[in-house]
Length: 367
Ligand SMILES: *Cc1c(COP(=O)(O)O)cnc(C)c1O
Image (cartoon, rainbow, N blue to C red; front, side, top):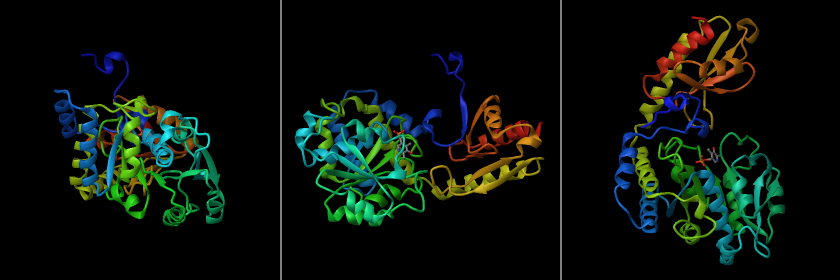
């Protein structure tokens, strides 16, 4: 079996975040075991998708659930469901939506790199200002749905989600919440849908630590049923976004594990990592480290913000980020600005916080 190293692609310690560019997250043994077991036999894939969905729905207190090939695939399929619920004929015409609802409303500052799926199925984004007047003015008979993206795009200016949901409900319009990275807290798995979102989308391969190419679509049965006929193993718009039997069983095991996790102990571990790094970094000349909260995608966990005196150290933050990647083992940290980066404990294996600390001393302390 060829290893990463034999290919010249080196393993990385992830002190960055659950970012896809470094592989998102690591699957725990329960997930790997579920995938291996699933790989041992053939199975009726549509029946398995249905059964896994029913179990995940029950576990996450949702009416229905569907496993997608990532949250970004979920964005595409959710948009499709919002067209299909009124116009089943769209199944044969995507992305051609003439004469059908073909507009998706989004707050202008929520636009992001994951929203391509909405346009790919033929919907046009109608960007609104973050105020209810702008929202009301945008709604018309061409509106198919509203999108709410959660993460770094959120600002205090956002239309509060409950207010947006209320306006949408008055017009019988589904609201899709892309909550890909909004775990923890674990109760987000039901919070958005209980608030009234028609569908909430999560990555299976971020903090859930399921297989990388998985995601969860949670919410209304009516919408999820629209997806099945056009998705693998059936033919249609969703066919290129297939998930295998191993991914289905793997993400189910990941959800089961996540619901049983000691989230308080995990938060304590993250606090301990940050405390360890602050104690090591703050004595270094030209380096200031502080605890920051919440972390990268607003998850309620601490991380460590490092500010360096670039002139004094003769090194920009950018150069420091590259120096961490050049360590043995390589360490990915989260870039922030010309003088700042973050160290994130969220994606570390226990013990790696020491490796990260020692690398900090070499990179920033000259030792
Ligand atoms: C990570 C992320 C995605 C993509 O999730 P995948 O599971 O990698 O497809 C989509 N939307 C947001 C807001 C994200 O943070």
